[in-house]
Image (cartoon, rainbow, N blue to C red; front, top):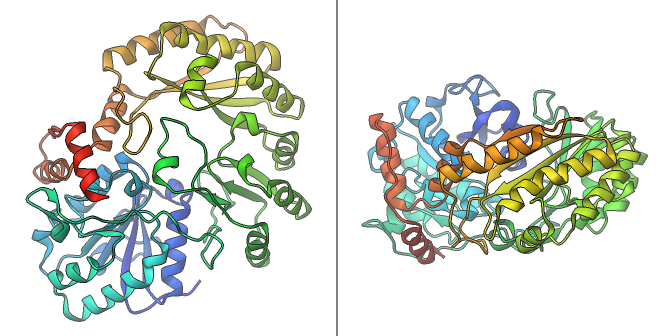
Amino acid sequence: MPKGGDLPWALFYPADYSIGSSNLGMHFVFRMLREKGVAVERFFEYPTPFRSVDSDTLLERFPIITAGVSYELGVVSYFNWLKTAGIPLSCQDRKNRSFPVIGAGGAITYINPLLLSGVCDFIVLGDGLDILDFLTACFRRYISHFDREQLWEELGECDSLLVPPIHIQNGKVIKKRVLNKVLPVNEDYPMCSTWTTPKSVFGKTLLVELQRGCARSCKYCTLPGSFGKMRFRSFEVIKKQLDEVLSKIDVDQIGLVTPEASDYPDLNKLLDYLLYKEKGISFASLRIDGLTEKMVLALAQGNRHSITIAPETGRDLLRFSCGKKFTNNSIIEKLSMAASNGITQVKLYFMIGLPGESDEDITAIADLCRSIIEQTGQKLIVSVGPFVPKPGTLWENDPFIETSAIRKKYKMISGELRKITKKTPQLRLTSPKEAVEEYNLTWFSYKDSVNLSNSIEKNVPFEKKSSREYTMEELSLLW
C-alpha cells in the first residue's frame, strides 16, 4: 500500500475500529486515495479518536476531514467527534484556514443527505469512487490558497456533490443535484478489503463485494429505490483480483458482500473457486428462499455453524405484503436442510409496527420460532425492532409506531417466547428510544441538521421541529 504524500487527509469512521474495519467503503476510499498519492490516514471513534491508526498523527494536522457514514446515528457520532476535537460545526465558523474542510459520504447519503447538511462543507451523493480524482484536485489547489469560498465554488461544479454553503440558501435547496448510483462495477475499482485484522467484527476475513444495487422490491427497504439497479461483478473480474490479493496475504476466510448472495449469477462458480483455494466462506446477507445446500456446505467448510435470516414477520400474508414471497413452510424446509448439514444456530430478524399488522402477527413470531425448534432442533436468537419508514421506499408515507405500542408488542413477544420451554430462544430487542431517534434522524431537514449541531455545540437537548412532509418537500428539491 503506497504511503501517500502531499495532501494530508483524515478519513473517519464514526464507530470503533472493529466496526469500521468491516466497512468496505472505508477500505475502498482509503486504498484509492493512497494510490493517488494522498497522505490519507484512518481515524475511528475508539480506541484513539484523535490520533490516526496509521502513524499516530494528531487530527489537528489534517486540513481535510471526511467521514463515511452508514446509518443515521453515525451522523450524531460524527458531529460529537468534531465538537470534542474543538472544530466548529458551522461551516461559516470554519472559514479561517486554521480549521479543516469537513465532508461526508457513505450509505446515508443515498437516503437523506440533508442529515449532514448543517455541518459539512460538502457531501458526496451516492457512489463516490469515481469523483475522487476531482476531489483530490480541488483539495490540492485549496491547500495552496486556503480560500474556502473558492473551494466551495469549485466543489459545486460536480453534480453529485451537495455543497450546503452554496446549494442551500435561507434553509432551502436552490439547485438540483444528482444521486450517483451507476458506478460501473466491472471497471478498475477495488472490490476487496484493503486490510484484514482479527480485531474486525468479522475476524480476519477478506471481504469481497459481488454487486451493488438490488432488483428486489421489499417495501420497507432503501436499496431498490436509492442504491441503483443491480450491477454484478463478473466472475472473471473477481477471480483476477482475488488471485492477486491472495498471492500477497494469507487469509483463511472470505466474506461475500452482497444484498442477497443467491442473486449473484456466478455464485456456484465462485464457491467452487474458493473451495478449491481451501478458503472458508461466509455471506453478509442470506435470503432463506435462495439458500442452497451448496451454500450451506461452503459455510461448513469454513467451520461456520450459524446463519442469519430475516423472515420479518411470523405470518405469510404480512410477509408477502412486505415484498418477501416465501412461506413459513419454506423457511422450515430450508432450515431443516441447513440443520442436516451442520447449521446449529439461526439468528432471525423480525419487524413490528408494519402496515397492516395485527396482534395475531405478533404472536405468530413465537409460533414460527416454536415450529423451527421442534423440526430442526436449532438454537435461535430472535432480534426484533420497529419498522422505520424511510425516504425513497415504497412505505415512506406509512406511519411510525408509537413508543407505547412498541413496548406492548415487545411484552407480547417476550411472553410468548418464554412459553417455549425447550431451547427457549434468546430475545434481543431494539431500544424504543433508539428506534425513535433513528426515525427522527432519517427525516431530518437542513434546519434540523443545523439545530442539532447548535445543540451539540451548546450542550443542550435537541428537539426536532420539521415534519416528515417538510423534509419530503426538501428532498424533492434536491433530486
